[in-house]
Image (tube, rainbow over all chains, first blue to last red; front, side):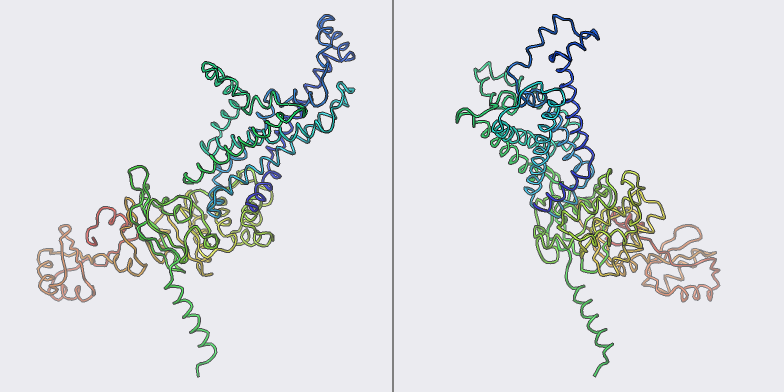
Amino acid sequence: MYNLLRMDLYRVRKSKSVYICFGILLAATAAIFGLIWLMAVPKGQELSIRAGMLTAAEAAEFADILKGMDTLGMFRQTCLDGGSYNLIFGVWVMLFVCSDFQSGFIKNVMALCQNRWNYVGSKIMTAGIVDFCYLILHLLFTLLANRLFGNMVPYADLGDYVFYLSWAWLVTTAFAALVILICVLSRSVAAGAIGTVLFSSGIIVQMLYTLMNTFHMGNWLKYSIYLTLAMGPGEYTAWKDLHVYAVGAGFLILYSAVTGVILRRQDI
Amino acid sequence: MPAAGECRKGEKEAVRTGRENTFAIETAALTKMYRNKAAVKNVDLKVREGEIYGFIGRNGAGKSTTLKMLCGLASPTGGEIQLFGGPVSDPAVRRRLGVLIEAAGLYPNMTARQNVEMKARCMGLTDERSANDVLRLTGMQDTGRKKVKRFSMGMKQRLGVALALLGNPDMLILDEPLNGLDPEGIRELRQLVLKLHEEGKTILVSSHILGELSKIATNYGIIKDGELIEQITREELEERCQDYFQIQVQDVRRAFALVQEAFPDVEAEVSDDRSIRLYGVKDGAELNQMLVENQVAVYASGFHRMDLEEYFLDRMEGGRRYV
């Protein structure tokens, strides 16, 4: 598996998609910071009112939107809570895995490595490494953007950053495992893209919620990847906050195992 | 006491004979079912070390499925596969195998070198020399920063062979490597295969371009509807392809009677009002002489030989004479 991981990391470094997806993520964050500055920060509001983008009444209304928010909250709001991080990261994972099948390179790999669990393990580890880099660099960019826009919100505690990033990394890696599962099952970029969009946007969770709620089981979905990311704790207060790790690890193991079984049963 | 040169020759011969007696590929009752349909049925394929084995069959006959099973890309439903005496699942055995199945699996947005380095990493090869060697061997060392998506079909196929050659495998499995190549590309690949064979590699190659295959293969296997119907050597094929001796004469009836009388073992048939086909003739000159001596004018005569394509089609149709 170590050799496969080396190969995958080499491809990550040489491919453009990883940089393009990260660029989109940063661009979206920068745009959101700009909009918030224009809407909620007095200097920006002045500019917006002069440009006719806001009325004085609207400006007064928006003045409070950053109340109680810190940089960690901003980081979550800009990308993770709404699912846009999962969408962009999921698209990268989908492109990364599907290109193995589309190019046919997987034949070169599988002719060498009979153990298909190694392939699954390597892909998930690669996704986990890229996910880790994305999250850390994205957080640093958020902190930088906050600084550049005049410290719109205060900094959170270091412990909160560590707690949040650790479970968010586990849950988003579990999401990557789901995307890998879809790609291995379908071997199609189109199916992978549709699956990524449906799962990252929460459409599937909402549909399931409607269905399960008729049996009074809708609350179970708070343990889904989508809702865990949206509603998971931003700081550690009690041991029950640790359930997010269980959600991440549980889905990661489940999706990895299913992917491994599918790959073992399928011919290449 | 024999001279040193003779000794070395003897050793070489012994090594060669030893290699020829060991199988690079040996399958027993290899079967692959897709639902209830058998794509490959009880195939007993035997490829000796050092051979260029031409694997022939129509589209959908089961060639690619067989080759995929040999490479571990598809699981057999039944039967056994032994590669160099070991199971396919043995990593040491798999490292002795280089494969190019159907299209060369290449990343289009990477260069030739990057594709090779990717596979080198997958194999755990760390030195750059391996990549340089295979790129040089396949003539791909000067492609520079050109992306694979801008390569011609021939370049892609050569790069596919380069990937297969990484790690210096003892055997190459090439599935339709000539597909889509222009005549120059075909010639280059043929020369490469022959060069690799000279280096001692065993090569299993499937192709529809039978004329080309016949220029390189030392052995053949014909698969029809999932069943391996024949395995023959080049020599056996040449013998079998010596089809009939045809004569064009002025008086067919008289010539026919004379041949039957003079050569009772020869099977003769009149193909048109001037031609007679004679099966089992060893010496055409003797037959011509006999006809001339009996005042039968012979306009033309000669042996007809089937080429591999005709032989293959003949076998596919059930065979005129060989089944």
